[in-house]
Image (tube, rainbow, N blue to C red; front, top):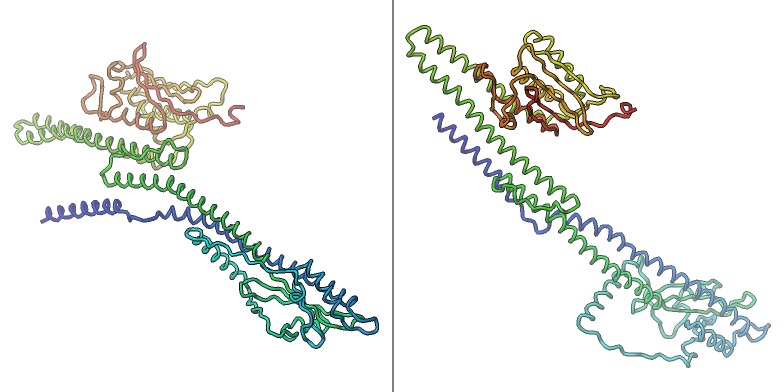
Length: 560
């Protein structure tokens, strides 16, 4: 039953992982990308401020209407003054004469083109410029009807203009209409003029245009003789404003079209590559993608190109890590199998041993195999933990000189009688040593690197020999060289010694004392710090290991 439950648990976990992968792949299919929508929203928002500028044309219209009112008031007062002076009977009798008044009105209206009406004191309409300007006629030209697209465009444009006009109207204007016969009572501004005040009114015509009426009293010697009413429509102002709005709308339409095209182009050049990269990443996480055919945008000199390069590098690094883990697992299983096979054979033979010497020998073999397994498991654990420590811990500035001095003092104080003599040589003429040998890294891992190399040199050297540790620098690198007087390394194995579980030990050394991971760990630490490690043989005999790490620039005080 326990086996069945375990199998069921494994099946459930496998099903969960498959469901998670499927969920990642089945992303919602959107008709429009949220990023595209944001790009459009931002661009259209900025364009909206430009569109809001069309409302400021109303100020231009209000200014023109105000100027028209002021001009009408000025014309009305000038004409009223002329009528008061020239159209009266005598200086004693202050009555308006019709004939001179008609002549003055006709002469002025011919210039100003404003309809002029003169009301008597009793409120009746006395003179209307429409009745005396017989030389003016209205000519109606019938325009040809526009059809098709032009008709649709005109209708849409006029609808927009009417909508903008309706937005402009802050208050409802009274509709202008004339009642026959006309009297002063029909016009409040005329009634005010008969009382000696000048006033104006704005009303709405049936075609949507406005009409301005200005009334002013006609006086002589401060006596009101009548009321003069001037009126003018604002069709020309409305036409000018509509033309300005139409020009603005055309410009706005062009800018809107260009903005939409640029927004979609920008979204296409950003969103589509990101979606393709995201889909490739999903397929990689689902295990259906090797990463070799990730969309390549590295030629683009922008953030999308950076993202593409980063994803490719990350995928290749991940693939290398997976291959390394698989290879490491295979190597571990192979290395563990040898002592386990020997241990099993010894255990199986122990029960068949007949003498105490045979049993003791078998027990010694078992103890050696257990010790070998313990060393292997410890070294394997350290090697497995190394990558995580390097990736998780932040690298800091490390001065290699005090680090190596501490290691040499530690070996001298603890094993001076059992190991060769260690010599630390620093070559940095004319510079402060505490500021020259600086690298960026993890001090614990760098210490492990040099301990492994020193231990390796000690294991191949005689007790009365010498081990030289030389610390120097090139232009861009810090170099640490460790030399011994041992037998050296076979020339065809100078690269193989850095492989995992490879061991090239002296013949006098007992088998199984080393796991073969020491130099592999050294190479792993060196490459993680951006450096290189080289093994070579000395001409005088012995081996030489050279470690080069990127050098940090000197501090200003160190160079002074």
